[in-house]
Length: 187
Image (tube, rainbow, N blue to C red; front, top):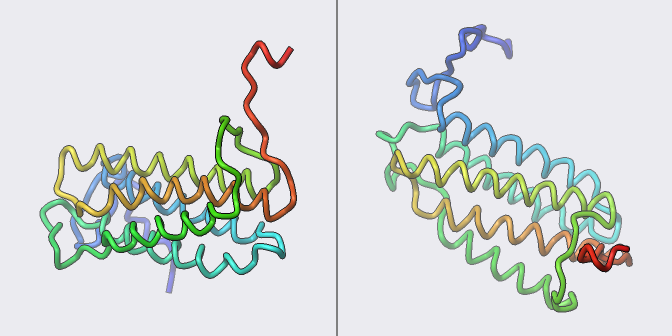
């Protein structure tokens, strides 16, 4: 099977139901961003230190869920209904429970932290910010077309989950978080 079809050379693509759409359409941008996010999670998995390898299966579950989410987004608004929606509020609830478990090992947040501290934690922050971008794009699309109401809470919580993961990874590696300093304190 060939990967290339040449059908997209003119700036058009096919949605999951065969509908032709411009590659610049907000919907295409949405599922493209989810694909980009999923790729960055793959990089995060590749960077996991030995102490955190048990998180690989959880991160791969998130990749599968994001693939499902992207499949939902690849259907036009006219095809959006409960029969095709895969993302559920239970997914969001599970993320909250996982964050609570990871947070038990973390010191309370009393200051802002900067993205970084280690390569894997920095990548977790990249994933966090990409998740926020996906969320913003989905919110924008939802202002114009029908979407699964479980998408926005899931993406919102997923970004929070990656923030907690970044903090947890720093602790797992025995390193310190990079604390933001006010300008007056940096001199």
